[in-house]
Length: 501
Image (cartoon, rainbow, N blue to C red; front, side, top):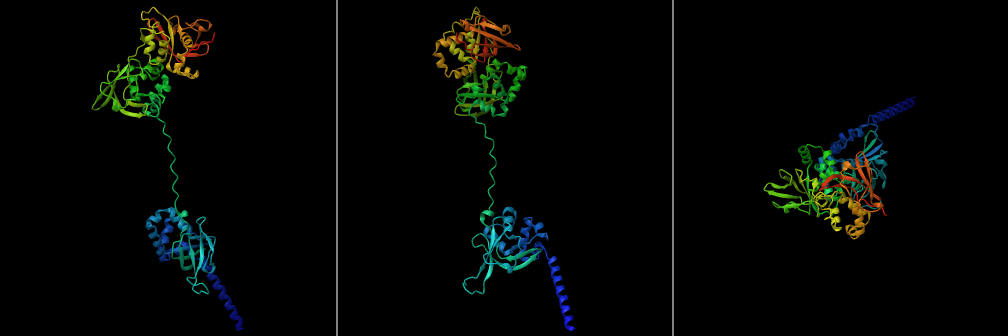
């Protein structure tokens, strides 16, 4: 009877112990609470806070896992070796987070009884593991003083267990005397990728490129495009000096002339002459300019005058009431050109009336090639009549028109000059035996000085704009009605080629 009663009491006591153990386990403190309760882990507690890991480690459902918790002395030794302060470590989130991750073994709550010699423990730091070793010191056989240690991935990074089998929720916590370190590559911040390269700066190898790259010269660029000078000024081999007026300078000119940009740009002969007056053959940097120096320009027989005063350099145009100032000397340059930015538009003497055809073709800045060819063909005297009795119409191709022709023919000016028969035919095809102004042009065929069936041009007129059509080409009017004594010159944008007879 007494024996049976004793058995019942023992069974009840066992059940109560199991229930108590279960209750203790259910109320086991979290990892954070366990760390905070240990005064020897204060640096770890601050590190966990700095790495924003408190919410994760305070969760009672975190785990199972194993944490190796370095002591304050372990952190002090690490900071000394790294020559860092505690604050600097916390500030380096990259390093701090990875070091802490390396102390957490996820998925297993490993207690001292579970330690095995040579065991490899994967950590939260991807690709980096810890290893458990059995350390017996100098003893080789039948050793009784062996202990387990935990190794990091760096040389001599071996931590001894200070306290084992602490528990925080579902996590086994072992206090160790060294901060464990993974491979250096895993805690070394990769250099940030280089910033994207800025857009390549436009290549400044010509006057046109320099103008295009300068926002305050946008109106000058528009003017160059409208005048058809872009190809000439884009030549990197052009040796020249440009005086480049600002946008404000063009606006002031329009106001002074009482006109609009569209109206100015539509008057191509005038626009071309004004722009050509800003280009000086040869490269002249600011330091080479001298007071009262005369500079030839691309406008024949029209010069600029340099004024040098203590406050700077200015340029006088023949039709300017006052000199314009160089506000940015040597603003862009290469070994072939230099551009100076000026605060005004330089004005040549704008003539629309000349004494003869020869004088007109020689004086217009865009027909110098035609003048060279007329001289080679010995026609300048015949076309030089100043009495007004000779009444012809000359269709005068621009210099750029001749460049395009010579490129198409795969020759050069010397090649054209060396073929007198072709030269004579081409020039005769541009000369009409009567003075006909643009308002007098009518659609249909018109005879030229080229004899034979191929000596006729056709005139097409669309919306009041004439176009000359030859046997193998056609040309539009670049600028009309230049008076040349009793004759008239129409500047055209292409060279007319007669058909073969």
